[in-house]
Image (cartoon, one colour):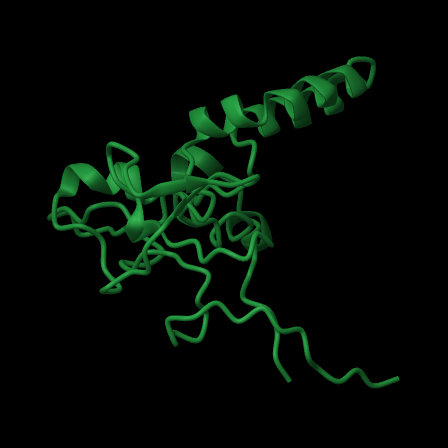
Length: 170
């Protein structure tokens, strides 16, 4: 069968390596920023200073930009959770830090997990697409999930397949 590659459901192929520092060549969608032209190569820009601009996830927005774009959602969530006690306030703080919940956290990051030993907890944010491809340094320990930009084109055929055609068995 076929499964749609359009994760953000906007009929536009999102890919990190098409993002630019000056936002030229981008369109705004309901979800964020999307490049107008398809990628020529599957690699980040050679300028290491642009990696921060490009490695922001499929929505094309940094956490600060996500907070601005989703201000109404965050306000409504804060009003809904206002009387929910400490657990609700902790969840609100977590959503305010990363409104799209797309941040990457390396599973051996002691700053994030400390002495938490649960493997499920440590891998919970490993599939995040924002910040999963930092510029490699000469350090021995790597904290990258991948060295390739994230994109919605899962099968690498340079098209966005939107068909949902698969069998279900009962």
